[in-house]
Image 1: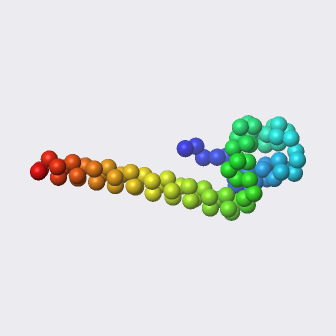
Image 2: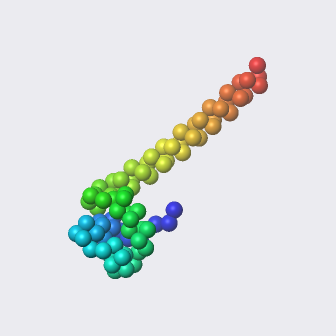
Image 3: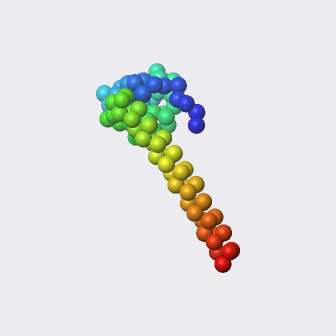
Length: 88
């Protein structure tokens, strides 16, 4: 996945501008982002501080890693069960 060129603090600043009542089109133009990006950030990070945003991203990465491990172990288990069935 492509790394964002915006820091968590910059994302929080952009979201805070929207919460203060600035129009989304103006915020996006000033920040150099699309409105879709703005609304995705708003949906995902609204009300979070930059440190909380970083922690959320770390948890999402860890969750992805753990899901991959579970998938690999499930495949291994199925292969071993297949081998046992063939021997019988």
